[in-house]
Structures are given as C-alpha cells and as structure tokens.
Image (cartoon, rainbow, N blue to C red; front, side):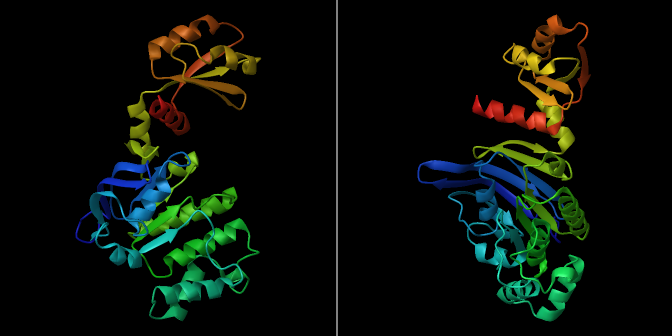
Length: 306
C-alpha cells in the first residue's frame, strides 16, 4: 500500500492491442507497498507490454486503474519519475564508466545532489571496484548490478524489473534477490518478471499469464493448491524407456525426468492412478509427492492452449 493505505498498483481490465492481436487482454492486478510480486509467463505472453503500460511507456487501449496513485491512462507522465524500470536488455552506455552512467541517469531524473546520490548508490550496490571501469566489458553480474543501481539512483517507490537476471550466474542472481528483499523491507514495491521457478518462489505473490490472459494469482502455496495437480515420483531402471509408454495415457498430463527419477503428473487423480497401476511392480517404485511450481505452470499453460 502507499502511504495513505492505497495499493501501489491497482488496475482492472488493462488491455493492449497491436493491429489485430490483443497482447494483453483485460488483465487485473493489485499490489501493495513493499510487496515483491512475481510476474510469470511464456515468451510473448504480454508481460513486457503490461509492465510498459504501468510505467507510462505505453498507453492502454482499454481498462483503468492507478499506479502509485496516478491514473495509468491520463497521468502517465506523473508515474515515470517515481518508477525504476529495468529492461531485459542492458540499456546503459557501454562506452561510459559506471560512475558516468549513474551521473547521466541522475541528470535525466533531475536528482538534486548528484554526487551524494551517486556515492550512496555505488556503496549500496557494492560497485566500488568497478566504478571507474567502462560498462561494456563488465560481466553479466556487474552489468545487472549497475542496471539496478541506475533504477535506484532517483529513489523510486516502485521497481518494474523485466527479466532482470537473464544471463547472469547463480551467485549474482542470489545477490540481486537479497538486495530486492532489502528494498522491500524499506517499503519499495517490486514487480518482477522471470522465467526462473526458484526466483518465483522468493516472491510474496505471483501472477501467471499466457497469451495475454491471467491464469493464476496468489502465493506459491495457493497457486499450487488451486491447480489440484497430483504428482508421482518414479524410481527404477530404464526410466527413459518408460517416458514414451506413459505419455498420452488417460490422466497423464506430464512425464518429466528429474535426475534419476521421473515425475508423472495429472489433475484427474483416478485416471492417473488407473494408468499407472499396470506399472506398479518391481523394480519400479511409485511415491506420491507434492507438485512443484514448474509442474503447475506447465499444466496451466496446457490448459490455456486446449
């Protein structure tokens, strides 16, 4: 919520059409102050378009609502100064140093004491080692850290981060998420699109969209429970030969190799049990396990296509 208790993001029916294609189709979202909200979906699902509508870069064709208390249709210019937007692709100047990039961004936002703001941001994001290096040759992790620093230089109240950890190593991803959680603790809201399931599980709540439609929203536990997906872990020899035999059987929606096991899932528990029954003999063993977020999202996408 904002200082007056209102949601930071509160939109209903947000829609964007390009030509004859509806990219975002009547999407609703409500996000409170200090919340980390994960935004998931396959490529081309409308995530980036939705984020750009929120921060005023695109005008919605239909729908209404507010972002940071400003109307997303009529007050887009008032939203921009209070938002830190990080695009999928590194968008800073590669032939400028880290410090020069931060100085340029702070000028764009009209930061009053640029030197102090740059110093604070460099310290906060642990950029001291590279502050005088050109941005171009930096590793993916350092570029990501610089991009987040550029988002934060003007002290925004909302971060809109579009697949911010794509192409960086696991340690850099973990450091990034630790920083996002610190920011959330300070009351900064973050809407983050990602393809990584481990990252999705670090969000307070999630929204999953496919082909412009909202398919699920809520906490990880609530989304998994609502889908009602039943999953069995199968162990034993020659599992890869078993994959083709199980796929396509009644009740079997997914058969996925996980290390030295198979995960077999479906929503119709009775049909799934009946299809697995002939295989329940030595040396194969079957154990029912909780469905994970990846399995649930694959199930949601298949439902969207059917």
